[in-house]
Image 1 (cartoon, rainbow, N blue to C red):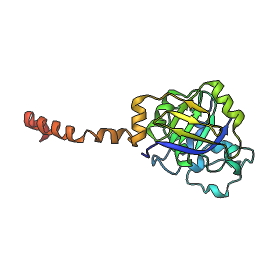
Image 2: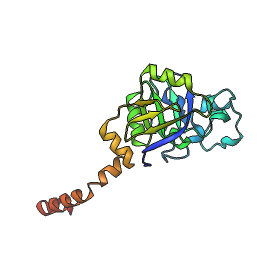
Image 3: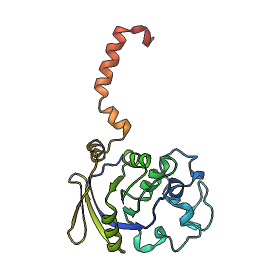
Image 4: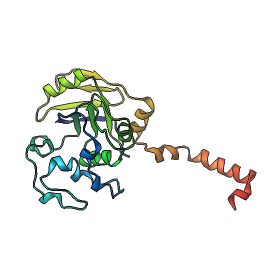
Length: 210
C-alpha cells in the first residue's frame, strides 16, 4: 500500500450527497478482485452515455460532457471534495480501489458510510471529515486549478490563502497510512514473534504439526 504523508494538489468538486458505492463502481465490475484497473470505470453510469462492461475500452466510449470527471479543467486532481454520507450502500471494497486507481489520494466530506470509511484507510486513501460549514466554504472557493495542501502528520489542510484547517484522524489509522501498512503488512511487522510462537508451540504440541 502506498504511504500517505503530504499531498499538495488540485481539488475536484463533486457536489452531491449520499453517493453510494454502486454509483462509485457499478455491480458488473465486481467480478474481478485484482484491486487494479478499476479507474476507467469510476462513476461509470454518470461518466459515460453507454452501459459499461468489464474489460471495455473506455477510450472510445461516449462521454457525458457535464459530469465533472469529464471536465478537462479538473484532470489530474488527487483530492475529491464531496458531500455527506459518501460511500453509502453496499460494502464493496472495489469502491476505494476504483477511486485510488483513478488517482484520488484523499477525500473531503462531512461524513462517510462506516465500512467505506474503513476501507479507504486499508487502501491508501485518506478520508477527511470536516464540518458541513467547512465543506460549504471549500465548495464556494473551489475552481479549476484550486489546490489544497494536506499534511497527515500535522493533521492540517492549508488553503491557497494560507488558512489552516485542522482535522481529526484515529492514531492507529494515521500510523498505518503514514507507513503504507495494510492489514497484511501490519501483521508481518510481528513476523519474528509469530515465528517464535510457532516454534515454541511445535515443541509443546508436536502432534499438531505432523
